[in-house]
Length: 157
Image (tube, rainbow, N blue to C red; front, side):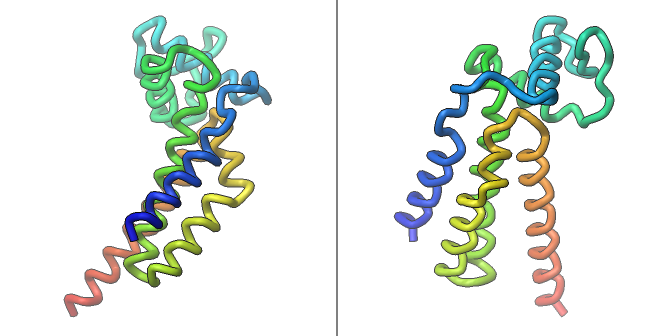
């Protein structure tokens, strides 16, 4: 099963990271997130994100922290701004594969992971520097963790 898991990882990496930094930041949200993360690094204030001198309390701070870490690793650029989103989707695909392998079957795990990895909306969220992909990862992981805990509890009774 390792070659299959590796193939799923490679497909996910290819779909999520291909041309990740080739387009400039677009829409109104991407520049706001990236600018706020850049400002955190410049001011060394990692508690409150700022955009155009105004605090941004609309979203949780985790996405800004992840962008800051990415900026420190890769420099301040489009690739680095989108890296947390792409990584979140890759992790979600791998977690889905592991979860489905345990609760469905090896074939079901492949179908589940590849369906997720090739879903247009999910791949699109990997290419945008917003909270969406991280939210997919965290909510998906929470649901799978809840299901797993329920199964463990049910098996104890």
